[in-house]
Figure 1: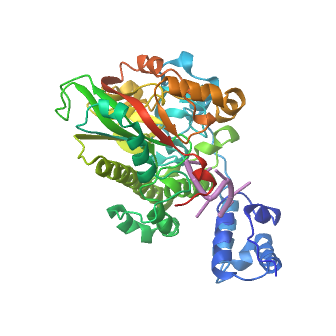
Figure 2: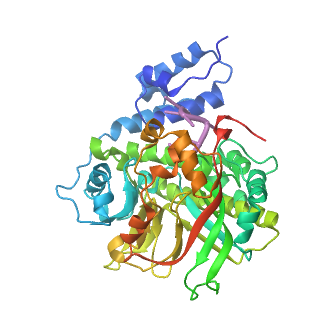
Figure 3: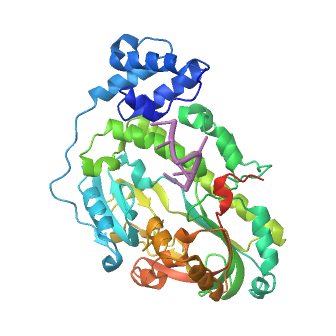
Amino acid sequence: MATRKLTGKDLRKLGFPEGRAIGEAMKVLEEHFKGKSILHKKAALKKVVENPGLYLKHEALGPVAMALIIKTEHNETLALREKRIPYSIYGAEGIEQGAINQMEIAMKLPVTKHGALMPDAHQGYGLPIGGVLATNNAVIPYAVGVDIGCRMCMTIYDIPPAFAHQSTEALKNMLLENTKFGQAVFKRPKDHEVLDRGLFNEINILKSLKDRAWMQIGSSGGGNHFVEFGIAEILNGDNEFNLPIGKYLSVLSHSGSRGVGANIARHYTKLAMDMTKLPGEAKHLAWLDLDTEAGQEYWLAMNLAGDYASACHHQIHERLAAALGEKPLALIENHHNFAWKEQDLDGNEVIVHRKGATPAGEGVLGIIPGSMTSPGFIVKGKGNLESINSASHGAGRVLSRTRAKQTLSKKEVKKHIKKAGVTLIGSGLDEAPQVYKNIHEVMAHQTELVEVLGTFTPKVVRMCGDERFGEVD
DNA sequence: ATGTTC
């Protein structure tokens, strides 16, 4: 008997519209139609999609019928503002037109109050990466980003920089033994308080993600995620950690909320696009009103994903600190894909979305990475409201992943990395240092936004390699 | 970003 799973594509063929009904149908198939033939499943779903009204009270298919009906009643398209609200751009000459176009659309949303574009900005989905958007009582899942709570974390150790040069092999092994990328996960994941949160049992989408959260905790993802040893140089002795000016062996990590955040983002983006119909060019900027149940749920789930991302970083650093046999002198951490409740110039509460942007409120510490062959920066925010208390989250891409694979040569990239004195595990051409803007130029565009307290120079870097194809150990 | 199409 054919028992293959029905796909979203199959459901669309049956006449399912884009949106929540497809997800509901998938759930119902899992729960009530297990083992039934594909023909049987299709026939049942076809009847519902043709006449949802008859199935509203149906024990199994009721939720599907409900989603189909809500869908057809919420089709009113909201208009954008005629004129966009003005916003600030930092380093406009280095920002691609596509990112500026996206920001201009975001500034026309009826819920938008303020915006700013950071110097590392480039085109994304909905809001550009490097876009900051303050709204009135509305949260936009795609202005938070797919990797909710993605962040940087650095720990600084009382170990002289010479150790990195003398013990490169040892550091490489520490990364191999204590970090997991892509599909790979730890055999025995470490427990963490965040896994015990009641919320995992209170929101449907989170119930289905609890096992994944447990399995993936302490791991890093793919793409631009990394864990690296390097040298932090503290340039200012007047710092929060009482660290004397000097150089220290340090660990820097970049990663997010893994499958948990990705699935939360996907679920609520769809819900938002269902509930808030916007003209085509703005459709990905659909928001959830914070006074609705869906908005409240997303807010809670987003915060949980943020805490989960933080927990992953902390475990990464705990493992490496143990491998080094040291306790960190300092830990610096900041999100760059998230939304916060903050106050604007007029003292009103706004929802500030930072999609690939570093919080830079007055005195707020953060890390802005460069590339694996150029320094990152430890920064302190200046609280500039023109930028909505934000700064760039890195150098930003100049080459798309596709362009990078087309134009760069493996040999050339390897040579460049070797010449910089960097040891690399994993990575691909799409993450070569050459795909990033010059970080020094990017920093020069944001001197009004952040003060530089120190630098970080990568020495031994690990990124996702072949693990994305399924190696698990 | 992502068991990269629910």
